[in-house]
Image 1 (tube, helix red, strand yellow):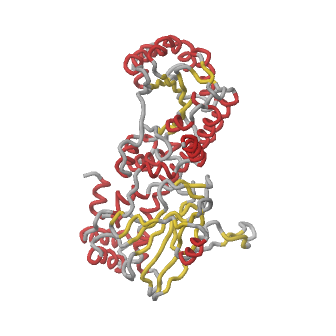
Image 2: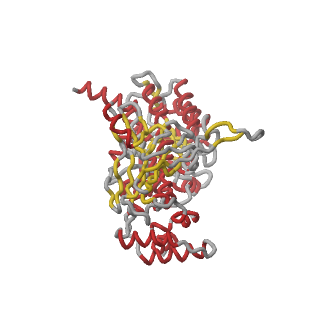
Image 3: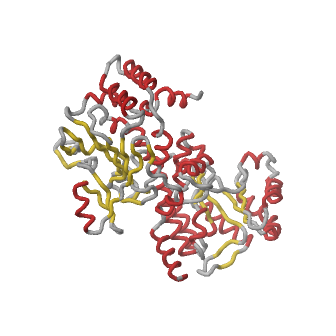
Length: 500
């Protein structure tokens, strides 16, 4: 058995927490029997987030029944780990789950639909106990560690979304059919650049909310299995340096010929890395030898630089390929290469994407000529603070009455130590709901919902998980529909109107 599987089998869902949470059941206010917490992005690199990944976490961990043997193991671990401290209330809580709640966490988790684009600073998820029980209410915050990991897929989906916005709008200006092309304009190369299979799977699935192209196989599998779809992502045959250099320094032409022999079919697409030795020699000397064969094959040949300046190199390749292979003008007056394309996948970020499309557009090249690939920069080069994710308690039920729970840290001047202001870390208070009126999102107290609904708002948080049962099971097409760019929705509505 693998290490992680042994941890999971030995300790169950309740074993994955932070050490200090072992002591929390003994700390809460007396008389409490229910608790609510919420999850939000408090800000960060983007003003809007694409919510994604909760369904993966719930299916992976929260649908398994906890056993007394697992509780035994957790308590034994806790007692030795916390220097021999015995904390009876944690054991009472976990035993109650097994004995009285059929081994499932008595929690209700509500969330906005996955794929929904929500301004930062709004509640995305609420978690509360389903029963008034002083033994188990503290499990709401005990499970924070596992639930908070949805920051990763949400952050990846958000980054991918904002890159998509740049590319899509550039395509609208320079290509004949932006909607037909956008799906394959950002490709996920990140599987080897992340820390674990789970990160590759969950973060890789998150990228596919916005795009169709990926080489992260486990991310595609996670989307397929976790969101009930047949095939969430696609790729093409492509070389790497090992296949190219296995032919030797003077064998690149033979490698390209093998690619043409195997993959150059009508309508097919294949890619070759071009910088194993000398990228300009590849483009100027080797590539022209295949011009006739490429045209006769009806295929598209994608050339990939993998070193050099991340912005200038792909732009220069487009220039040179236009001279070698020729181009036509599309309906919008932009140049489209004949049979060849470029993909830039080395060391780029959202700012590089923006710079590349701006340079190409300035030289009257359509963005049809280029695609982008991102690896660890897409799936791994982020953290919980990228979107300032937090899960905080917001209300506690004590002696039959709900009370606000919140924090409000004061920030001090580091020289005078005089108070300056409240921190952005101030948390929300009260039982919460997310509302939407077709234009604006608003986080309000549950008690205020009826008033806003009367003014045209709709409650957006849906029950996803309820005491061991997955209540909402979304498919991937629903998620993608929710995550469409506003510009895509306008275009779709226009097309549908014209057809009608």
